[in-house]
Image (tube, rainbow, N blue to C red; front, top):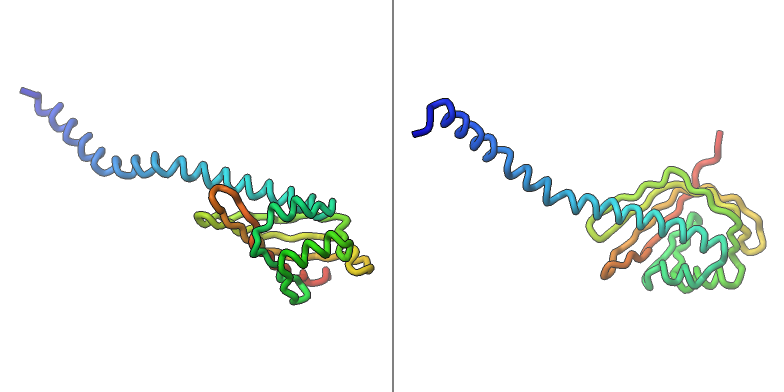
Length: 162
């Protein structure tokens, strides 16, 4: 027969385990998902860097791989530009980006969707005119069979500095 004090302690430990156990199991199950989300965020951030470099380098092949077939760009001038037209502007030199500086970039994960927001400071020649653009942007990525595709871009002009 078990002494009363040992039996009370055992019952107390079982009660605690009943309360904490499900939370502990949830935490153990959640940890790999959180790590995967962290890896996806890092992967998206890396793709953003590759994308910016490809634009500056005029590397249409890399942009074509990064952008999904349905990709479009709602630019700061209000025009919606589909992938083929945008890539042709880069290829032809109608748009030549000289530099892109990113600021305040955040990646948010929603299952198989990633939303990237931030600001860009761009020096470019557009249709022969040198321009400096200061933009707030939103990029959307979709995970397709384990591969992230950039599917949409929205840019808005930032107000002039005061």
